[in-house]
Image 1 (cartoon, one colour):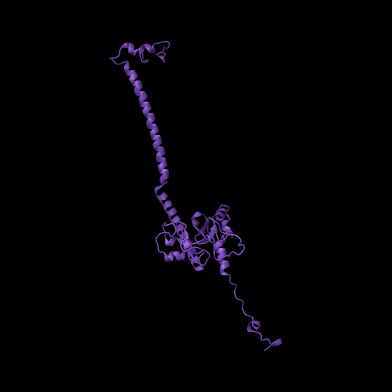
Image 2 (cartoon, rainbow, N blue to C red; image 1 turned 60 degrees about the horizontal axis):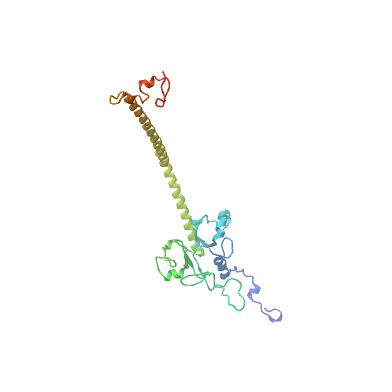
Length: 284
């Protein structure tokens, strides 16, 4: 069949086909993940942090959200509760990255980013996978990890544990594994805390008061006992002194003149008024 002017319609013009899903350009997708904070969508600036799921954030924005208690409202950062849930990244600056608008005849390479791998020099633009060593925070490409096998960190030479390394901006499958691991760790910590509380309650029920309470009571009792011992010692010394003074009057080796110096002598007791020695004449 033909139309006016002898044109022949195509199948796509006669049959309505199902529209294909629009695909987001990979460069645009990578730009939002690798260049912007996942919390505020502002450009990344040092200090930059990564969560346990490999997402990138500006540290200042995350700290402010935690302090203001608004981070729980964010779908991309609600799992961050404190410093234990993120690590500050040690990033290597890309000297070839041009900041700001490019003017004149300068060539603007869109694949260049602000940070790169310090070993392979590949930029962090999403075209290559990057890892972060959770122990020290060093960031380098997965390619460097595969090519240079080492038990130490490739950047700082510190300790490295493959089970504690996190891939930055991972694919959906890897992201689901990270989430499952995180949920398992939370359940394990909750179970351990519950078990510890149960053991403590059972121990208190069997042994009575806690050890700290018993120790404090013992310390208090020890202080009281010590005070009583000091008081008794002081009383004993006073009694011995009085006894020694009384025994002077019956001591045959002492003269009468010496004995009259003390208030226990008979002459002092019969005095009608006191003098410089007999301060207490004990009137009868």
